[in-house]
Length: 182
Length: 182
DNA sequence: GTCTATACGAAGATAGAC
DNA sequence: GTCTATCTTCGTATAGAC
Image (cartoon, rainbow over all chains, first blue to last red):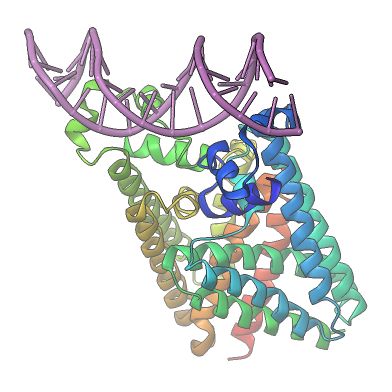
């Protein structure tokens, strides 16, 4: 159910993700929703946000296995490209969705903040260890994550991966520069 | 009503923006909703997205009045900082909201795509005219818009303007580099 | 144009049996 | 744990009077 909710969140947003659809997609039994999630929808969304945050963090760790930081950025971008393409630009990031409609589910928004911070930390450490100027590693990481998340949104609106490709190209230049400056 | 809807969209998202609240905030008469918007909510959201897109484009034009492209980026960032601060990190970008919940309102998503393209065009032209390497102006513009939109989201999730500041700093470096390389 | 009243559906949540 | 049934609320949309 948590996974299904995350998938629905990234497609439709939090508010448009209903229990009915989560049940339908996950095949979970109707009657046990409030047994597993006594906190109701807010709890489900919060846990799904955490799940998605961890999932994407794992992808980031995998991308950072390369010793080349540019290859890492490229691998991270590639995973988003795949999501966009396979969903016909209908799916984005569940953590972003949790942020945007977070006033009604403060727990989910907080979980989104934690997820972003975690990704940033992973990426900043990775960049610093792989030759990026240490004092710039953190802001580079923030830029990378923000730019990719933003690019995914623009790509969905325009139903084209071109914005993501342009952003990816620029990010590669920036990372290369930051390493050369060291 | 269009303006009120845009304000609600940027705070709560499309799905959570109800006619009742639009009426309440705008002071418009209940009975005339479907007189002015025969297409119902979808039409209202679509027109609000266009309105917001034009509004932000106008801000971008104003920011581009400076002859210094870095000052332009700084001015654009400043307007987002103000929105975040004044809303206590409760408000983001209505055009982003229209994109994320766009499956149910394809017209609004399309309007969002047009808005992003327009901003990108304005910024790319401005950067090219102000000394940015011509062949990079467009991808620089995409990066700038995507990164700022992404930073606004991260800032909301973390209830802090720090991510926006870090992204702004990096963007200034990138733009400065692109001009120096010319 | 704007009003009131209302139809209609969907969603979250609860109760109590099994 | 899971089921069925139901409650309540809320949202969009429509109808028809003024």
